[in-house]
Image (cartoon, rainbow over all chains, first blue to last red):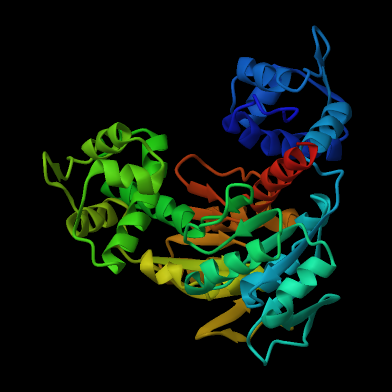
Length: 212
Length: 212
């Protein structure tokens, strides 16, 4: 059994948010916080916050609140941020390059080893210290370097082919930016970033505002 | 009253997903679909799908199902995809350039008029046909061109300053990629893309898999 396998996805999806807010409190030099104050920051109710954190052993103390640094550290461990994961990026266009340059990666314990593309104009270039290689060598590279996750920043039309290559090369997880669902075996973790859905939501709210 | 002001945010968040799946069905030449089949595609229950779509007048017919093209068109209108919104991007680094190049924009009815940056090396360059301009002229540009939305792809440290400029220039909405919460008046719509939270979720699932 997983240590937290009984914890619902909804709770887990809130953890990164707690983690982010606690990081901001640390930046501000704040050492302790009550669930009420966390409620004001996050928009979640105080009782929901207490319930969420109880899933992971509950780090608060009655009348004292939470020790910010301790809770931040514990959540970081739960989120796996103390573990280094090796990643490669398939698709070395602007989005792939932006991801390779993304500072948040290091904070999350991810290390991008290489970008891959099929465009000869891009192959051989370097983004920071990270070389763009020919996608034909991707399986070999992933296996040799025990890469944990594959990131897909190709156009939608190539996304499933790339996912198939990642599965063949035995990555553990895929971070998918292509606006399509990937067919992969159940044991591969897929995390989707749906830019188009976010944009459609924005468009919806703008239209409602206009009607209003 | 807004036309759909009684519809919950949770339902609205699901609409872009329906819209995307219906688009894929159109690509495959499929003309009609039952809520049961939509359920298999989307992972939502058939009764939830019927309930969701009922909020918007219900486009299905008993025993026939939904007319794919009609439903796609109606959802597109509800999502405001038939309206053109003008956008500018603050932050012309890799992410800003990736967003400026993003094909999904046109499908969602957004038109990027300009990128803005403070880096003299970037000012004057063009991404596709879109010029990178000096951020000092952003307020003026937004007002003159009646820009609807501002997109923030700067580092976190500048995000609030940029948001303040957007508010001053009277944009209607902000699409925020910086990993921080923006303080803006209630009448400004903010849609956040939380890449770090997505990455943390991936990290969590990888760690659980490892423990497993």
